[in-house]
Image (tube, rainbow, N blue to C red):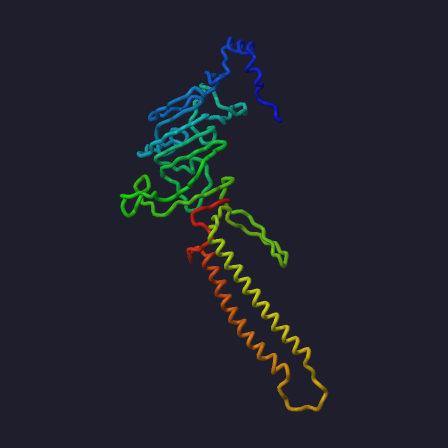
Length: 335
């Protein structure tokens, strides 16, 4: 086991505790007052700040992700109210000597998503993805929107029953034919997307593919952020593919049977040595040819049907614009 950073035994050494108190120090046992370095928040004129004793803040003001001139509050915008909850202001502050840790009250600091330990940011108007340094997602445009951003080393959301992640309009009555609008009154007609991005990158990634027959390796690029498949549609698609493969297997069996019959008739057919005579129907012509013609017609009919079915599978399940059975979600993406 790793050694503890702090020797807990010292907290129960009465003599040591007494000595520490005599030097004006307090360990904060039992959540008593504890002295530790806490930076001084850079307070803007419009802000009301409620400050705890141990680097915790509730800031009421206008949109401001960091410095006074940042965000919509820095531009003097209206309708840009903000509630900012911070635990560990400038916790990852880099000191001149190269060490990291929250500074003392002699240092004035502004909120900063990059170095604050934990933060819940609520704004009436913000560019939240830009503020938090998040990867871009096609179709998403979080500019000038009301937003809630949460950032910490670890975040947990635990429901004892269900969790819903929902985008789009709420189900409310009495809001007219357009339903619930955005916070600024704009129409909200298209559901927003849900993106699960591991690694905070949505750039295209290099891909290698190997041809199973030729063993040739080809290089290309593919989307890192891809739509999640819809389970029921994917099951239906695989069912259609399996059904088509079975029909193809049946066709192959018919072709094999035709070849076998042809081989049997040709093997039993002989040409005795005799003077040339007028051509006459032979055993192969009488027996094999009608069978081959019949089977060939049936196989060609089946092939045409199979071709149509494969076209249906491609358009119905693999083409986003053709059908409601498209196997990918149009609104949920992941890396």
